[in-house]
Length: 325
Image (cartoon, rainbow, N blue to C red; front, side, top):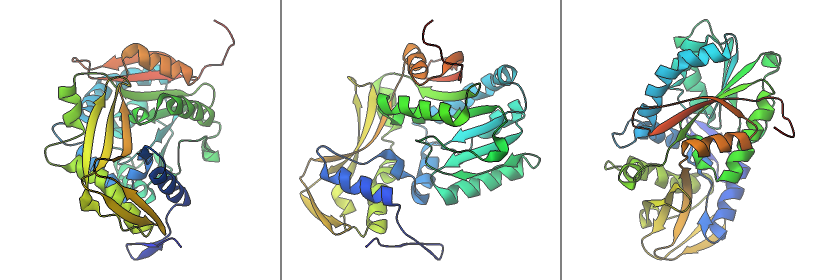
């Protein structure tokens, strides 16, 4: 039986997909759990702290790019579109876009419902004349968006280089799902982190204050809380490494000693030095980003970067598909 989570006086059952992914991921070799399950309430709060860390360049760099790019985005996209943000989190960059494009409605989508509703309220207070329609959902598959925006041209917003968390096959599937959700004629404003030296990349995912470590280890806390687990969290440590062959940062939870534990009534044994792979963050060069977008059914029409070339922001359009050039 699933153990109910107690939060704010309410009892909540664990997501059955979370249960399935955790049990399957712990049983497989090498062990791996999808990064999407980082984002319970605590995980979402920790990630927001990560974005403010001095080592974590992506958030501040992308924000500065958006401040420069969004007026041009507004010209290219036109006014009155429905802005649909995938994985909105706290929506800290969203006001930059909303100020520039004057949308008719804003639809933030996130898997963390409580966090989504709170951040939507804050943004609604900031834009009192804008209709805000928070949508709790897993955006990894095609969505049936609110009928009220069915005939409204759409501008998808996917900042933060979240696309980098997926292996290329899944990234292409996600872009196709976004195209299906938004429709032909829609546009997509997306951020992608770029390849750079390990001296910059690794500290961004293994900060001196240990916030990223807490974020990673919180996944084990969530498993214990929601899936009746007894994982000894103190037996694991956060590990971030650069995989040059796959052009990605990998996050792992490494066992510091031999451990045995139960999750949802099943017993698992993890040897010292063995890891649970919890996240990838792929980095894309400028050409790579354009190829990825085209593979997902999106035609790039504009791109921006910062003076150091650390990060890229791209505007693409879901044009009518054609079988040949």
